[in-house]
Image (cartoon, rainbow, N blue to C red):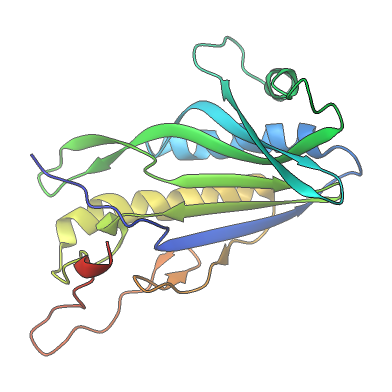
Length: 216
């Protein structure tokens, strides 16, 4: 059985920033949740099953309460229904709070060197941060299947080619759906993101990359 190694934090990320109509943050975020999940589902990177909602208080930030909202098995899922389910999950003791962040939940498939699909929880991480006038979206990855070298520094071209293209296409589809440019995140110890993927570092004289397993 092939084990999929994972870093404890994201090895690469991408961001999008979207201006919205004043005080339409939740409706806009619900629509984005569905658009992003469709793009990821098209590439088998995430099948949306629910969202985790962080509740904030204006001018104070997070109150430390998060609600888990299931979207599994709902018929005719649309932005109105998503907004309704999220609103219903507001903590009763905190009526003065608003939705500050939405995290998309679900599993996806990665493809090993033999072409076999393997299901993995949190194959990609997606969060949507809300403010009254704009929304920021972040997508991050924690696994080496998107990189030319695995975490041990060995090239794994079959795994890379089976997965990297699907991620690149999903990033492009999200960019189109949100109507704004994809912005690569900052480099990490593991990787340097570029607009639609991860930069391949220069190999050493033996054709290997850096061994990063001690950082997992």
